[in-house]
Length: 328
Image (cartoon, rainbow, N blue to C red; front, top):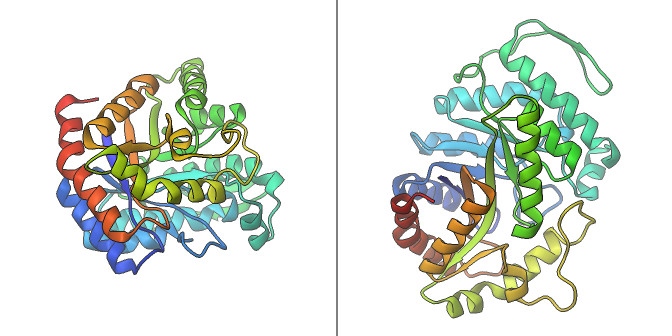
């Protein structure tokens, strides 16, 4: 199983984010992931631009968008900018895309939230063509393209991998048809994820695919003891999930009823505790979901920066080697 890092975003200078990415490459992480949010004082809005800067400070680590909100952009622009990142990085881009879910983000661009699924479907299909064909012409519901050829071409052949964030059944089936991996967000617990994983594998099998990969995004916090982890990260995690994930209706994720405690929130959802507990939790997620990839984020607003740095250091020194040795 490969391990990725979603680094610090928006809580300090971007220089600190870049240094974290450099340390991740040295420590043996397989990839770096930048997400996309708008109208947000903490999270960054432009992952491909950020990855260009990361590419200039790293040499071999893969660079992913986790995830780019494709319905907010014209596919030609994404194809061109993605190809540039792939060229600048020497062929390291993984394009993670999703439909989005926050109404205020679509309102900021003047797009209808109701059209995000059809815009993603059409945009992703067109993106694949733009990266692999020349003189592309397309007249669809949302996009019109005449005789477009992307230059420079991506370094990777036939194109960079495309990962899809998806939850509902139509979106998961779209992922099987158009994507190279299903990229699972951090908000669902294991009981909510398991039937989705079965559906994805089934959908891949129905169209003759036997290589549909699953990548899981999780918040992680490691401390010397589980009690220390709860004390340092418990309240910030609750606040982050309430503000970022539980505010809107979701096709799969359900907020635990009643007063939210960190124990109830973290159960089967957040990798939180001492190093051994974190290794065991990751192994359980890997076994239950047949994971190919785990992407970890160690910071949320409210957790002191030194505590986040200590957590990442403990993961690097004690959790990551155990994962490599045991091969979960």
